[in-house]
Image (tube, rainbow, N blue to C red; front, side, top):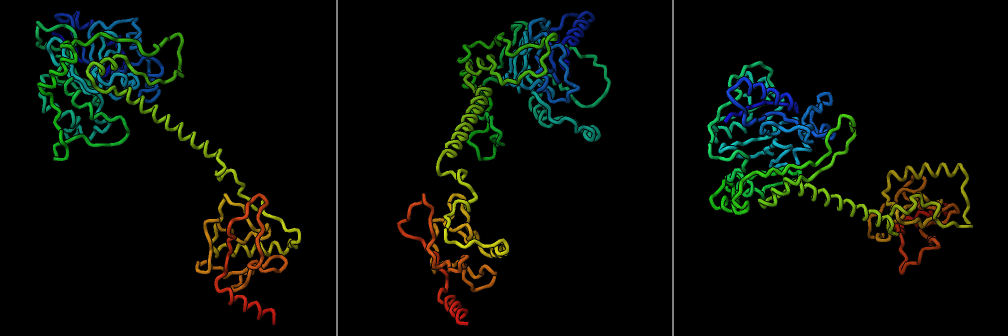
Length: 453
């Protein structure tokens, strides 16, 4: 079996297949399989281009859309993995793998298949993107995670691409002769061991943004080894009716690019691919995209409920936003009150400001003032707070800023002896709340001495 291996093709499938045709004319025979190890860029339309993590100047439609639309068909069975410059919205429709076009198969986030008896596995993504200079110098260039797999699996062939090092090389064995089973079918098959592992690890799928640790052999987890077992493989075979053939069930899920009618502002849509739906239903595992969509809808519904709750609270009579924060105009007016002239008003406002900086106060926005508009420096207490002689409320600063004085109205009356008037729409409480001054007798004695003098 002749297998061709390519690195990053960046969506230029026409050039790839033209090169294969040239190699076939020069070589001993036709190519049976093409493996693409780098950026594939399965771009169907303008929306896919916007999902590529590259600067706009590198976003080019290229020729994949022709194979997606059916205008062309890949002459060679093509398997590819995802690089770090892909149409992520397209490939995320197929997390477990699937057909992106007739005869072009994506291995998924990670996947294993068989072709003519040869097991082929792939890992999408990239470990690092640009930190390579020092690694080239100290001979540590590469992915430690991939290296761990390489050392453990010891595959016959290992192909990697997208190393960000510019060099020129001549590959004499870019098309390899790989031994295969002549009696094996010439179509793609699922790998039973890989499917068993997928089913065993289904409970570990996490679609949230929260970080979490996978089970390890550290004594904290009941199970950490998810290797395939004979019993597990039998269950998978029964679910698949002992048929491991990968079905040719490609279907178009998005509008294809039309050069005559470009749509630069095409809307991005989260789609559920029927290939993934069928695969997950048959194997009995979680469809990641369905769970993501469900989570998104639940979050949207919760947001609507919260918004509705906000609207209902705004319609309630208890909402503070309905009250005017300026309560001076709502205060009762005393017709016998002597109005202060401008000079005294200015002086009072200065003294009041000075007093406010030294005296704690409570100003609830949902309770109207029980004082006259002229007494704006006297603070109101909410109904739940009853001040008695035992409470420590200091009122040792009077309107002139002198300690020990009483608060007087414009006509010289002591506010502690004046009953406060209520608004007309307020009901009389069962028990009138009174504000008592500490050491009342001492202050009264001082006032008598001042009058006698």
